[in-house]
Length: 635
Ligand SMILES: Cc1ncc(C[n+]2csc(CCOP(=O)(O)OP(=O)(O)O)c2C)c(N)n1
Ligand SMILES: CC(=O)[C@@H](O)[C@H](O)COP(=O)(O)O
Ligand SMILES: [Mg+2]
Image 1: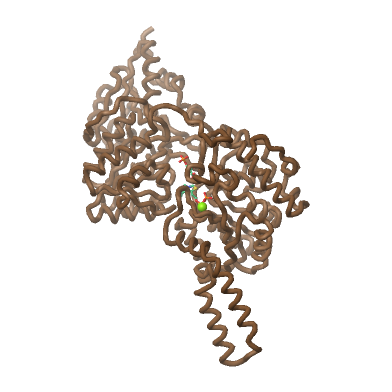
Image 2: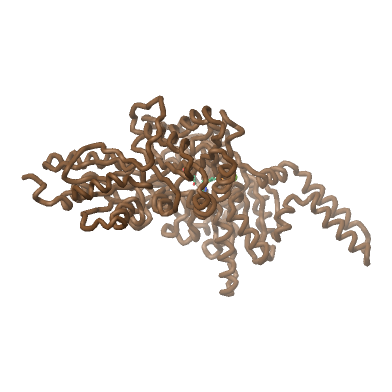
């Protein structure tokens, strides 16, 4: 891929209509120029390069044949919608991709009328498509509904629930299965193996054609022989029709078709468009197509940081290890001591830092696919039988398994350990991925213990604490960022459950800070000390249960309290402090909750997101000045 390409045709594509005037050869040139554009732009911005390189021809074909936005294009997850954005007038905004107030990395209604379904979480496209198909029919409209779903997303339970409904109602809609054999990591599961079989045995299609040709040769026959021939043909389907599983669900299966062969793709999708009912087009693509580093390692290039085009070398940020890395290495340390420890990931082995664990303990590592609900109750089953499951999951994706956490794990009080990564703001992935709700949605469940460390060293001790805790479910949450670079204790000590830690003494006010908010609290306390106000800073490392003794002491001292968490203020840790005092009939305290306000915080850097919601020392100082009575503020 030369680094300075000239986009001759792509520069003239401002809306999908501009595609429709082109010849197929010109469309192929647009595809080439689009790949060039993606590689160049994302070398600066970073983003989901490999998924988008894989759907260049597919997205061009969709916009060439069909009429968005009248026809509804629904992208599952939406991380592969960059080509769609390029073709719908947003090419010039790609320098702002995933930047603060810039182009969103997922489908976004506010950006374009062509963006009709927002996602970020996987496996929602088919349910949305079905909803839009029913609405269309009830309104007497005739537009097309076209969902693009990947082979990974297809393993998500919602997708299978939707297929069941789609096949039942038999309404006209098109499912384009973008099969590149990859989730983020190589795809897993029986469904993935089934698709692999279809991909590999191309003779299915040839044999089917020969058989049908043979049947046609038999002279026109009537009666039982005709019925027999039909039954033979139908049963032959089980042998040769590759997509029989989909056909049995009630969808017409077309494919598999090469997703980079535009003429073939166009023909197949024209055929699919004629089907008067649900149709699934099985498209085989290469994740990372056209850029050799991404083709060679599409796991790494699924979501990539800025890189050098020529070498594919990623521009690494230096610094202390990420919390995720510390989690992964410490889990190996613990697992070496106890074979009861098993790790579970819903399709995020790399992102969750478990690749090392998988290598060390292949029999104790379970990637269940994009299936958080199954992962949770699978963990419950493991715990039921005396193992020590560590369910590694991003905060935002744990939302998908809330009932299983309540119903199967906490109610049953099973010893499941939750390793909740990406807790707090996550930066470029934005509002669909912010890990800011798990404090609120977990702390209200009986039997749940929820911790957050002040640094990577304390994370290790929390992991030991969780491992040795056998009173039921326990969770530690940690952010998508580097640790603080603190010294690492070799010996792991469990922390007494429900105990906080005073980090800075003070008698005029107290800040109860959670996790990555602690440095900010210390900075504000330092600033206040210059005004003669001594602010105590407490590491509120147990969100549940709270340190009741310390809360009682604070009440006795009757000093103002400020709670600080990178989580939804509504129902979060600070709410818990208020609830505690209410339950203990303590009245009249001055308490200020600082958390994430009640709206979805969009993409940008974590620093920009924190600034936007007022997580700044200046803001904390002004809140403390308002809380601490004048008499305590010495002149
Ligand atoms: C509920 C949920 N779990 C996990 C993820 C993380 N995730 C994003 S994309 C992806 C893989 C999707 O694979 P596939 O659908 O095959 O798309 P591809 O990237 O291969 O084009 C995963 C696991 C998510 N977005 N949503
Ligand atoms: C699209 C998606 O959900 C994942 O690719 C996610 O963006 C990964 O997030 P991290 O980059 O934090 O692992
Ligand atoms: Mg895939």
